[in-house]
Length: 402
Image (tube, rainbow, N blue to C red; front, top):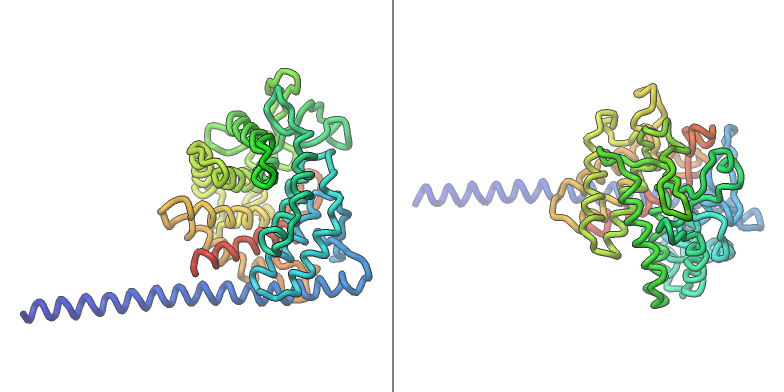
């Protein structure tokens, strides 16, 4: 009897101890989220005050070498991220101020629905108008479907892919490509899946699946890292070459490219429960998080094979995209490690090493992203899409912990 009593007491104390640890961890997570929300409110209030006082609608992308904010027109590939961040601020805070700004800044770029000269209309219309539908309860169906229709004009049936860039314009014309497809294009497929859901027209869904399947077939190496660019013959569908545009070298692993791939296949699994998509996401996860050149804080260098690691710039944007995708991946699998990995990334990004003091950094939230080192653009700078996916990750984390 005495032994039984002591067993009961010991078990009870162990339960109390474990419960206390869980409560402490939960409180820490809640505090982390609340702290990041407060910081984002402060930074973005300063950012939007500047915009509102300008008398126009400005769309911030990054800062220049002098610390001045660079604003972009509606047809810049990043134009949907800042409006999308306004919708995420509304979801995080419940403050209708952000809903009003989200609607205002989103509707200012409505011409993106007719853009056909590059593939990024998915980013542009998806992050803005789709979020406005989900979070603002505003019916943007005609704009979303028209944007998907515009994106679909870039589908090359013989190759089964959406052409990313026009091969006869700008710096791309010098590369000799015929139908270049970049891994980033996986992110645009959400717009197509949603257009089918909204319109009932399966054309968009079928294009998205074809592109995802062809990318799975041709973009990945044996170690499950991905090429940045795969060039197709649009008439025969044959692969003409595999190269890079923003990575260190053709055979290197550009960090944000791996993040786009990871997020892309995780997202595609949401719409088409093809086990091959989930399997590929897991393979990419293993490549990233077992890589010998991944720093201990999980914020990658801009390229996993860059020549001068550890003296290379980090890319916070790659980390935020990956963290957000990890939270979604966690909803499909029982293993807690995916959320734990995402949590570690968010904890790192929440430190002064990466999160800017209020009133600095052009009033962007995060520092130390990389746009394109080969093009000498946006090196060790804030980027609006780094902030966007950081806010998305915070929402997903909060939702998982409710």
